[in-house]
Image (tube, rainbow, N blue to C red; front, top):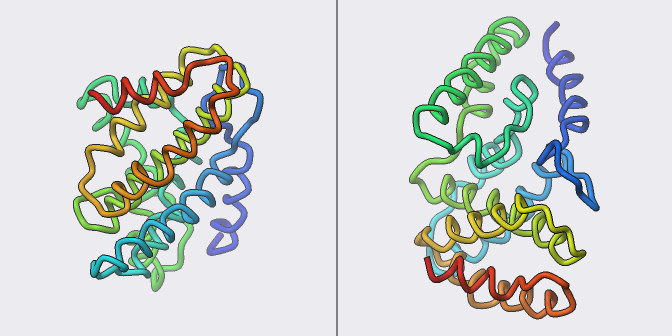
Length: 209
Protein backbone atom coordinates (compact mmCIF):
# COMPACT_ATOMS: atom_id res chain seq x y z
CA UNK A 1 0.00 0.00 0.00
CA UNK A 2 1.00 3.64 -0.19
CA UNK A 3 3.45 5.29 -2.58
CA UNK A 4 5.22 1.94 -3.01
CA UNK A 5 2.13 0.64 -4.82
CA UNK A 6 2.18 3.61 -7.19
CA UNK A 7 5.90 3.21 -7.93
CA UNK A 8 5.45 -0.53 -8.57
CA UNK A 9 2.53 0.18 -10.89
CA UNK A 10 4.80 2.17 -13.21
CA UNK A 11 6.32 -1.12 -14.38
CA UNK A 12 2.97 -1.94 -15.96
CA UNK A 13 3.38 0.96 -18.41
CA UNK A 14 6.47 -0.77 -19.80
CA UNK A 15 4.37 -3.82 -20.71
CA UNK A 16 1.52 -2.00 -22.44
CA UNK A 17 2.28 -1.89 -26.18
CA UNK A 18 0.91 0.89 -28.35
CA UNK A 19 -1.12 0.15 -31.50
CA UNK A 20 -1.80 -3.43 -30.38
CA UNK A 21 -2.74 -6.12 -32.84
CA UNK A 22 -0.92 -4.69 -35.86
CA UNK A 23 2.36 -5.73 -37.42
CA UNK A 24 5.14 -3.31 -36.44
CA UNK A 25 8.83 -3.21 -37.15
CA UNK A 26 9.28 -1.51 -33.77
CA UNK A 27 7.24 -2.04 -30.62
CA UNK A 28 6.63 1.04 -28.46
CA UNK A 29 5.47 0.86 -24.87
CA UNK A 30 3.28 3.44 -23.16
CA UNK A 31 6.19 4.14 -20.81
CA UNK A 32 8.53 4.98 -23.70
CA UNK A 33 5.82 7.09 -25.32
CA UNK A 34 5.37 9.13 -22.13
CA UNK A 35 9.10 9.80 -21.91
CA UNK A 36 9.21 11.00 -25.53
CA UNK A 37 6.19 13.25 -25.02
CA UNK A 38 8.03 15.00 -22.18
CA UNK A 39 11.04 15.56 -24.47
CA UNK A 40 8.92 16.99 -27.28
CA UNK A 41 6.93 19.16 -24.89
CA UNK A 42 9.90 20.83 -23.24
CA UNK A 43 11.30 21.86 -26.64
CA UNK A 44 7.90 23.06 -27.82
CA UNK A 45 7.56 25.09 -24.60
CA UNK A 46 11.00 26.62 -25.14
CA UNK A 47 9.84 27.78 -28.57
CA UNK A 48 6.73 29.32 -27.02
CA UNK A 49 8.85 31.14 -24.43
CA UNK A 50 11.05 32.55 -27.19
CA UNK A 51 7.89 34.18 -28.52
CA UNK A 52 7.03 35.72 -25.15
CA UNK A 53 4.53 33.10 -23.97
CA UNK A 54 4.56 32.39 -20.21
CA UNK A 55 4.90 28.67 -19.41
CA UNK A 56 3.92 26.99 -16.14
CA UNK A 57 6.76 24.47 -16.23
CA UNK A 58 5.65 22.57 -13.14
CA UNK A 59 2.23 21.98 -14.66
CA UNK A 60 3.76 21.08 -18.02
CA UNK A 61 6.02 18.39 -16.58
CA UNK A 62 3.22 16.98 -14.42
CA UNK A 63 0.69 16.60 -17.21
CA UNK A 64 3.12 15.39 -19.88
CA UNK A 65 4.86 12.79 -17.74
CA UNK A 66 1.60 11.37 -16.36
CA UNK A 67 -0.83 11.91 -19.23
CA UNK A 68 -1.24 8.20 -20.04
CA UNK A 69 -1.04 6.75 -16.53
CA UNK A 70 -4.69 5.71 -16.76
CA UNK A 71 -3.81 3.20 -19.48
CA UNK A 72 -2.58 0.97 -16.67
CA UNK A 73 -6.27 0.28 -16.05
CA UNK A 74 -7.79 0.31 -19.56
CA UNK A 75 -4.82 -0.43 -21.83
CA UNK A 76 -3.94 1.37 -25.05
CA UNK A 77 -7.14 1.76 -27.02
CA UNK A 78 -6.54 2.52 -30.69
CA UNK A 79 -7.06 6.18 -31.56
CA UNK A 80 -9.63 5.50 -34.34
CA UNK A 81 -11.67 3.47 -31.84
CA UNK A 82 -11.23 5.94 -28.98
CA UNK A 83 -12.38 8.85 -31.13
CA UNK A 84 -15.07 6.99 -33.06
CA UNK A 85 -17.67 9.17 -31.37
CA UNK A 86 -17.74 11.87 -28.71
CA UNK A 87 -20.00 9.63 -26.63
CA UNK A 88 -17.52 6.74 -26.68
CA UNK A 89 -14.58 9.02 -25.94
CA UNK A 90 -16.48 10.54 -23.02
CA UNK A 91 -17.40 7.11 -21.64
CA UNK A 92 -13.81 5.86 -21.84
CA UNK A 93 -12.56 9.01 -20.13
CA UNK A 94 -15.12 8.58 -17.34
CA UNK A 95 -14.02 4.98 -16.79
CA UNK A 96 -10.34 5.95 -16.77
CA UNK A 97 -10.86 8.88 -14.42
CA UNK A 98 -13.00 6.76 -12.12
CA UNK A 99 -10.36 4.05 -11.87
CA UNK A 100 -7.61 6.59 -11.23
CA UNK A 101 -9.73 8.18 -8.52
CA UNK A 102 -10.34 4.79 -6.90
CA UNK A 103 -6.64 3.92 -7.10
CA UNK A 104 -5.69 7.17 -5.37
CA UNK A 105 -8.28 6.73 -2.62
CA UNK A 106 -7.21 3.13 -1.99
CA UNK A 107 -3.43 3.48 -2.20
CA UNK A 108 -2.17 7.03 -1.76
CA UNK A 109 -1.73 8.52 1.73
CA UNK A 110 -4.43 11.06 2.46
CA UNK A 111 -1.98 13.96 2.77
CA UNK A 112 -0.81 13.35 -0.82
CA UNK A 113 -4.11 12.54 -2.50
CA UNK A 114 -4.84 16.08 -3.72
CA UNK A 115 -1.39 16.22 -5.31
CA UNK A 116 -1.95 12.94 -7.13
CA UNK A 117 -5.41 14.01 -8.29
CA UNK A 118 -3.84 17.09 -9.85
CA UNK A 119 -0.92 15.21 -11.40
CA UNK A 120 -2.90 12.30 -12.84
CA UNK A 121 -5.78 14.35 -14.22
CA UNK A 122 -6.56 14.72 -17.92
CA UNK A 123 -4.04 17.38 -18.92
CA UNK A 124 -5.28 18.28 -22.39
CA UNK A 125 -7.20 21.54 -22.20
CA UNK A 126 -7.17 25.02 -23.72
CA UNK A 127 -4.27 26.31 -21.60
CA UNK A 128 -0.94 26.67 -23.38
CA UNK A 129 0.42 23.73 -21.36
CA UNK A 130 -2.58 21.57 -22.28
CA UNK A 131 -2.23 22.47 -25.96
CA UNK A 132 1.50 21.72 -25.89
CA UNK A 133 0.68 18.30 -24.43
CA UNK A 134 -1.76 17.71 -27.28
CA UNK A 135 0.85 18.66 -29.88
CA UNK A 136 3.59 16.58 -28.23
CA UNK A 137 1.29 13.55 -27.97
CA UNK A 138 0.37 13.79 -31.65
CA UNK A 139 4.01 14.38 -32.64
CA UNK A 140 4.90 11.00 -31.18
CA UNK A 141 2.14 9.44 -33.26
CA UNK A 142 3.68 11.13 -36.31
CA UNK A 143 7.12 9.75 -35.53
CA UNK A 144 5.93 6.26 -34.63
CA UNK A 145 3.83 6.01 -37.79
CA UNK A 146 6.56 7.57 -39.94
CA UNK A 147 9.10 4.99 -38.76
CA UNK A 148 6.76 2.22 -39.90
CA UNK A 149 5.89 3.84 -43.23
CA UNK A 150 9.53 4.56 -43.98
CA UNK A 151 10.31 0.86 -43.66
CA UNK A 152 7.49 -0.07 -45.99
CA UNK A 153 4.88 -1.19 -43.46
CA UNK A 154 1.65 -1.27 -45.47
CA UNK A 155 -0.67 -1.53 -42.46
CA UNK A 156 -3.36 1.05 -43.22
CA UNK A 157 -3.58 2.01 -39.56
CA UNK A 158 -0.19 3.74 -39.67
CA UNK A 159 -1.20 5.86 -42.65
CA UNK A 160 -4.34 6.86 -40.76
CA UNK A 161 -2.34 7.52 -37.59
CA UNK A 162 0.18 9.69 -39.44
CA UNK A 163 -2.46 11.66 -41.35
CA UNK A 164 -4.82 12.23 -38.40
CA UNK A 165 -1.99 13.33 -36.11
CA UNK A 166 -0.80 15.90 -38.66
CA UNK A 167 -4.34 17.22 -39.12
CA UNK A 168 -4.73 17.63 -35.36
CA UNK A 169 -1.36 19.37 -34.98
CA UNK A 170 -1.84 21.85 -37.82
CA UNK A 171 -5.14 23.05 -36.38
CA UNK A 172 -3.62 24.06 -33.02
CA UNK A 173 -2.70 27.74 -32.88
CA UNK A 174 0.74 27.80 -31.26
CA UNK A 175 4.11 29.23 -32.29
CA UNK A 176 5.67 25.79 -31.84
CA UNK A 177 3.17 24.27 -34.29
CA UNK A 178 4.24 26.72 -36.96
CA UNK A 179 7.85 25.85 -36.17
CA UNK A 180 7.08 22.15 -36.49
CA UNK A 181 5.32 22.62 -39.82
CA UNK A 182 7.94 24.97 -41.27
CA UNK A 183 11.20 23.58 -39.84
CA UNK A 184 10.74 19.97 -38.74
CA UNK A 185 8.16 18.45 -41.08
CA UNK A 186 10.22 19.23 -44.22
CA UNK A 187 13.07 17.18 -42.71
CA UNK A 188 10.67 14.29 -42.15
CA UNK A 189 9.58 14.48 -45.79
CA UNK A 190 13.19 14.66 -47.03
CA UNK A 191 14.03 11.57 -45.01
CA UNK A 192 11.01 9.76 -46.43
CA UNK A 193 12.16 9.98 -50.03
CA UNK A 194 13.83 6.57 -49.71
CA UNK A 195 10.59 5.04 -48.43
CA UNK A 196 8.57 2.69 -50.66
CA UNK A 197 5.45 4.49 -49.40
CA UNK A 198 4.76 8.03 -50.65
CA UNK A 199 4.90 9.83 -47.30
CA UNK A 200 5.18 13.20 -49.04
CA UNK A 201 1.81 12.73 -50.75
CA UNK A 202 0.18 11.57 -47.52
CA UNK A 203 1.62 14.65 -45.77
CA UNK A 204 0.40 17.05 -48.44
CA UNK A 205 -3.08 15.53 -48.35
CA UNK A 206 -3.21 15.88 -44.55
CA UNK A 207 -2.09 19.51 -44.62
CA UNK A 208 -4.70 20.30 -47.26
CA UNK A 209 -7.59 19.11 -45.09
